[in-house]
Each structure stands twice: as C-alpha cells, then as structure tokens.
Length: 389
Ligand SMILES: [Fe+2]
Image 1 (cartoon, rainbow, N blue to C red):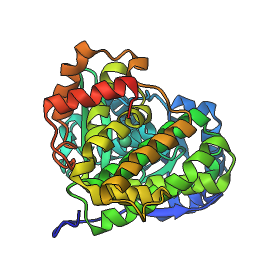
Image 2 (cartoon, rainbow, N blue to C red):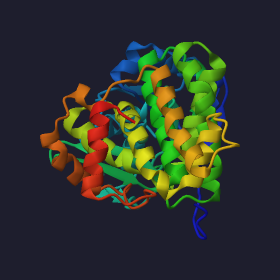
Image 3 (spheres, rainbow, N blue to C red):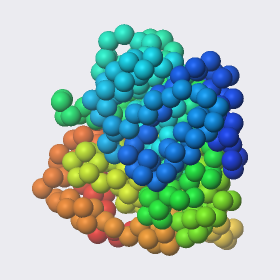
Image 4 (cartoon, helix red, strand yellow):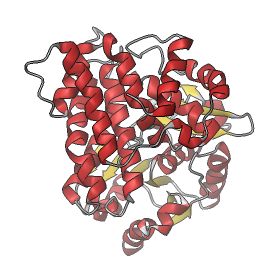
C-alpha cells in the first residue's frame, strides 16, 4: 500500500524458456559446480522428470548424486540426511527439481554444506551466517515461488513444529524455468498449486507492507493467473498457459518474498500440520473467505484485483468492484474443480481453538490488511467449512 520505506532484493538469476533445461550443464559450470546433489521427491522420479534432468547432466559428463528421501511436508530429518549424502559424495552444488518440498529441502541442504551446526540453528529470519553452496532451482509446478524466495519451510517432527528459515542467503543462485517440465503435471495438482501462486500474489498485493515494486510484480502475476490457470488445468499440454503460470508463480514469489502474506497463509500452516491438507488446496479454500473479510481494509486494491480478472468495473463503486474480486476468484475455483471445503478434510469445530492459536502466531497476521479477532478467525473457519462466500 505504497510504503514510504522498503527494501526489495531478488538475487536469483532467472532463466526462462521452453527447452531451457538444455542449458543446465553450462549453468553448473558458470557456478563452479563440479559435482552436484540432485534433490527431488519420489513423485518427480516416477513422473520421469528426474531422468530428463539426469540425462542432460550425463550427456555433459557432470557427476551427480540423486537424493529423493523427501516427504510432501519436508522434514528436518530429510535435510540432515541430504547433508550426509552430499558430504559423502563430496558435491559442491545442489540442483533442486520439483515442487516446494524439493526446492525448500535443496536450499536448506545447500546452506548446511557451508554453515556449522544443524539446520535447527537457522530457524527464523536472517539467522544464516554464510552463503550456502550454489543452488539451481528447477520448479516442476507453478505455485510455490521457492525458486526465488528466501524461505524454506520445514517440519520438525521431533519438536512437533513447522519452522521457517528466511534469509537472502537462502535464495537459489539460478531459477531455471522450463515450461516443458510442467506439461505432464496432473490437472488437480496444477489447480491446487496454481491457487497457491494466486494466494501469494493477492495476499502480498493487498497487505500492509506492500510497496511499489512488490505491487507491480503482484499485479502482473494476478493477471497472468487469471488468464492462464484455467487453460493450464484444462489443457495440460498448452505450453503457453504453462509458461505463463510458471512466470506468474515466480513473480508472486518475488512479491511476497520479504513482505510476507496474509490470513490464508496464517491458516495454511496449522491446517496443513493438523489435517494434512495440501498447501495449495488449503489456500484455495481459505482465500475467498479471507478476501471477503479483508475487503474493507483495502477496497481500492481489491477493486484492482477484480479488474485484473477482467471484471467490468467502470460503472461500479469501489466497494462493489472490490466485491467482484471475491466472485471472480470463486468462479475460477469452480472452473478448475476446486470445490472442497474444510469439512471434506475432517476439520471439526472442536479443533478451531487449536487452529486459531497457531494461526494467530503467524508472521503473516500483522501484515494482513485487517487485524482479526479470535471471533473473526472462528467465523472465517466456519465459512471455509461450508464453502459459502
Ligand atoms: Fe503458499
């Protein structure tokens, strides 16, 4: 909302294009990587995407070791194990291939190749001491933005917490955005991860820490998602739609990188932890009720969101135009088949206090355009139980 002072730093080099994966060997050489740890999850191996990356490295005689012991909510244990494998193989760089889990883990492993102690020592903001080993991030979903962000989100099951690591030193050196790697992503995952990207873009666009640079990239991200997510879901092989979604999710990552998000993401953490609702889905469920609640806190920007979605707002009041943004996002969710509610994931009212306790502790609450009470948070959960808007 036009902050008078801010910082905006995006140290990740972006390489975009269909087929740009073929430049990976040259990029590893540029970064001085002589032997790489290839970090991915088992699903990415099954989808044949790791083979595509591995074949490019093999053809260029670049040695690599695959590490794929990663869950959908990446664990501290995976980082510890990945570091052990990386040290044993004497790698000097990390290539992350996959969605947010793989990229977050790849970044954290790279940090631990040059910093002392364990990854737990670096939970929090700006705790990392020195630059990690170089990371090339290759996203195979269009959602997380992890390929350009300061964040790694890890589950620490031993201590039963989910922890954020946030530092400019955690940004990958290169984000390799190749839409050809996303065309086989199933429709349901395309939809959910795309809604994660949209939630990043909208929450950072309307939040209290937004500034002219974050807003500019968020606006472009929202417009790209409004115009391309349907086609990416409904025509998986549409390379233009896939490419635009990949660009949109990276732009959204650049937008929220340091200014954080809002209430949908505050809820996403406990709802993901307690009920194992995939991150994109939980954001999709929470986004519309949160938008409706937030409207009075930033009517003008929500009106702009409606415009970016192609709503005709010229004869409407700002309030009416802002309300159209909620309907536009709801319509998008319907079109891409995201109609589930919290009740479909066995969330029940007797767990609300537990959910709200954790959500209220999130760093995403203070920047939300409207400060919620516990009663407000309860109301938002109630709406998300039924899907009413
Ligand atoms: Fe997210």
